[in-house]
Every structure is written in structure tokens, then in C-alpha cells.
Length: 262
Image (tube, rainbow, N blue to C red; front, top):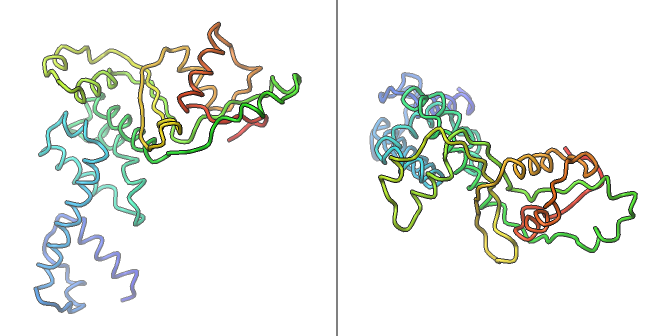
């Protein structure tokens, strides 16, 4: 049996529901201070605990909404259905929102999957800290003929959500200094919200993430920026210059290009 086959057997044993050691692994005659089944069970427990802790750190609001015990069950199911494919955990929570939307006990709670999306975008923004400042001098030096080709570039880590439920309001209520449970109970769960998530500005000198509600007009404009739409193809609102300056100051936009980007 080669190394790849042994690793495959171990992975299957680790993620499977059968706690007894498979015949194939028994045939390897694993030796140590404890029986092989006990060693595997210890490793299995540590494996699940570590990944559940990681997911809870990424999705604290989801955990708060469903309770710690159910969140652990939810995480364990996700881990079983979404095995690790790389050692770093940086991308491991990517599919958590999709899993929540299809997992039977949570499929009828759309706000929960959207909250997972919001928290994952926040996590991405936190790890996208940058120091690049907007190149105002280069922008001012453009010829008039070039200005229509300007494409404003969003800072890495910027995301927008067109939520079908009030996930921003829920997030804000739960993370308030004085959370009110009746505030959540009285909330209209069919209320739609459009949300902007972005890394903290380089001027703060510290990594972090911010989120804010935005209007539909601003959502559509940022969406167009994200798609690489040229200035000449945008429908500009009366407050475009003011809003552009605001987003640049926040670090939402940190560059521009004259060529379409993918």
C-alpha cells in the first residue's frame, strides 16, 4: 500500500461515522503507547475541535443566532462534507454559507446563510489590509481624452451584498454594547438591505474591517466598478464626485486603470 492510499484511508476513517478501525488500517499494524483505535479517536476529537473553533471564530454571529451547541453540530456536518484540501485554513469557510442554505435544519432560514456570507466577507476584508494610497497625482495628469476610459478599482477585500433579509441590522443588534433580544424578535425578516464591506483605511495603520448600509444607487455603482465598467459607460448621479471622494477616503477605492480588468 503506497502513501497516497494510506492517506486516503486515514482521511476516510477520520471523516466517516464509523469509529472502529477499518481492516485496511488494522493491517498496517500501527504501534504506539495506546491502541490504534484510541489514538485515532484522540486525533479525530482534536481535529473536529480545532476546525469547529476556527469556524466559530469566523462566524460568531451565526453561532450567536443558533446557539453554541447547534453551531458545533452544524460545523461538524460541514467538516464531514467539505474535507480540507490544503493545510492553511484561510479559505476553508468559503462554502459555509452555501452549506447552510442547503442543510435541511437551516435551509428554511435564509437570513442565516446571508449572515454567513456577510461574516465571511468581513473575514476576507480583515486579512486584506493594504497600505497603497489612491494615486491622485497620476489621475490629475491624465489627458482629457483619457478620462472617459477611467475604471476605478476597488481595494482587495471590498465586497457588496444584496441581502434579502436584514442581516446588517441583525449583525448590528447582536454586536451592540447593549443587545436587546426583543429588538431581534420585532425585526421584519423580509426587509432587504444592501451592504458594503471593506478593509479599514490605511490611514488607521491597523488591520480590520468595516461594514455599512448603502443605497441601491450606490450599490449599483460599486457593482459597476467591480465589473470594470469605464467612466463613459456609467450613469453618474449628481453626487458622484462627493461619493467618489468619500469612498477613496475610506479606502474602498484605491486605484484606477485605463484598461478593462478581469
